[in-house]
Image (cartoon, rainbow, N blue to C red; front, side, top):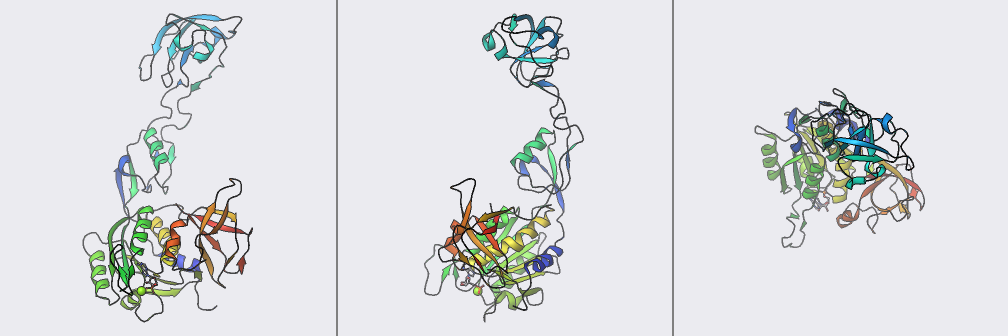
Amino acid sequence: MTGLRTVEAQRATVLAAVRPLPTEVLPLGAAAGRTLATAVRAAVDIPVFDNSAMDGFAVRAVDVAHASPDEPVTLRVVADLPAGTAADPAIGAAEAARIMTGSPMPTDADAIVPFEDTVGGLAGSLVTVTVVAAPRAGGHLRRRGEDARVGDVVLPAGVALGAWQLSAIAAAGVAQVDVARAPRVAVVSTGSELIEPGRALRRGQIPESNSILLASLAVAAGAVVVARESVDDDGDGLRTVLAAVTGGAEPADVVVFSGGVSAGAYEVVKNELAGTMSFSTVAMQPGKPQGFGVTPGGTLLFGLPGNPVSAAVSFEVFVRPALLALQGRTDVDRAVLRLPAAAPWRTPPARRQYLPVVIDRTDPSRWTVRPATAGGSGSHLAGGLGAAEALAVVPAETDAVAAGDLVDVLLLD
Ligand code: AMP
Ligand code: MG
């Protein structure tokens, strides 16, 4: 087929237009989902100090080097060290300190005997302890700085901050992070047939489902949704909404239109934004018609096809990478797994297929994929999207997928 742009060319056009957003400093509690703009360096060592990895006794290894059940060694207990203590008791010959997990190791001690290797165990007296096994020198000790030292990079710029990352930053003694501002996204559905879901429909009308789809996807990609609108095909509504969201002190960074970009007679996005956006046919299915442009003020405009599956796939392939790139994310691509098809399916000629699929996880060592909708790859099968958990990506050159064929699968979350 001639005249079709490759997905890569369209993506390159989009990504080349992205200017990274300014950054802001946030407390950790407000930073979930944001992207680090500046690497985080440890402000304290992790661990902060040498400490015990077990509940037990801090000892001098030499005193108990030959301890065994047959030759137990009894030590005098000279201190009790709960977590949080600042004490550093002197430990002399044949002496020990009871110590809890996480308590600072006394300077004079060099090994930990767990409770399990004493006669009394946890219930033992606090006057003496009888040791029945020789500890390894350094055993059951967590060394200061063995995880990170002051100044070490804990996380590089460009990573997303999830729960694990935020906890690593907190453990490094850092309370604030420099992150990209969240992109402001406006979502505008076009179509005179669209009615707010739940309302009574007269003949010709359908529930509007793309705006909730695209707004939710935008939020999942780290954006804040500043407007979610549905407008008619006559153009007035589109002009009004566009002026509102691109004007003012805090204009939208991105406007995502759906519908009105293909070859029909009432293509409102195409008609209204012909000067600002370019309209292409891209070698993919679904998602062939794509509009993209940048306003003079710098707002990125996406014109996605209106069929719900097309809109979802187009967001995934073009809008999500742009939103992540705006935030300075190092990796804007989804993880790809190569999995066998559980069933055969048809593929379009000369266009890359993005097929919503369900993953069968019955055999953990051999996941398989099958189309999410019984009707196949129809881009109007909006209900089937509810079952989809991934996208199978089949190259343009592949004529058909047979059961057992390996296909690339983009994992969505
Ligand atoms: P369009 O791209 O405007 O030609 O729309 C293609 C198909 O998608 C038509 O059947 C529309 O009714 C449908 N459609 C467009 N926008 C939406 C939307 N926001 N919600 C649900 N269906 C839509
Ligand atoms: Mg339409």
